[in-house]
Length: 431
Image (cartoon, rainbow, N blue to C red; front, side, top):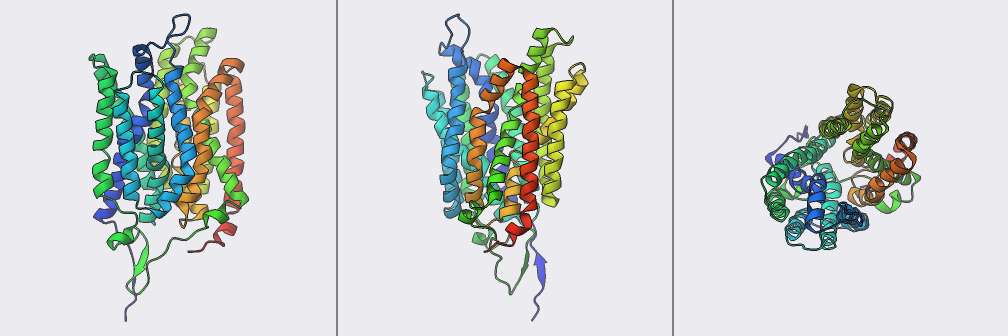
């Protein structure tokens, strides 16, 4: 009897899963994370948020993003367990509905505190959509090129952000009330997600008689089971805590990039540069966003082949980007180059970290392990902007960059240690 082994080819089901990931990040995630700053002054002004001296106070509104991140921090371990055991269609559909309804409710609010309710709802939805369910699904459906396809999906947060920010600007300039725009956001979130989460995906390829793309199968062999370390065993390993610190600090370091415009304004106030600091700061922000969108795809592909080398390259980009932005202030070109290079490091938060977890701990209980790593990641996201802004405002931006460089070294050391222990960890993998 013939017992030929063949590699699983791409099917329409595999393609539909990728399309679902693209639509979720393009819609729900981009609307949540890439457009809220546009609403910040508009909502604050409409609801009468002013300080004692009459200036606009945007801090109370911005607090809902902290609520969002803290919700993801708390919900992450629970979501990881649910994803491991439940039908992902249900989890992602409920998550998408939470995001859509949260935006629709924002169109009805008349008090700032009410936005914190939507912050909780968005956090409950996005912890699965952006952080846990998509990487888990791609790991289950793709033995080959999982990182590349994850990069494509994650790049859509940048693409979607550019489109939705442009739409917001157009609608707002045309006189549309922010309440109507929020209603439109809710409809977009639901339309770009629910048809795909309900009808286009399954939790595993085996549910529809398929196998992961790129896996080797034969007629007589039983389907290959996920292999890896159990979550309980992983969390007893020092490697888990090294990756825990590694991933959290990476997310913390990415939040240096939004400080670039403030850094430029500080240079203008000091009179140390001749160019228009507002224009340069704005272009730097765009450069980071464009670079990180492109880099997410490239990083996913590179990490599939060699995650350790990709990690080192990301470290080099992070250090080079900071140095160029810090020391290249007399040249606009140097600043733009620094912003672009830092964009490559920026991409590692949502692309490289899940790949590192998968390659070291396997796919057996991936969602539970990564959900616990995500606790620190989202905790850093909740307070990162406040911490960097505090350091820059009170101690100067050179301190921000020095602290950033030190943390880059810590990230590299944690990553190298984790990969150094990879063979020992893989020897303990079971089905």
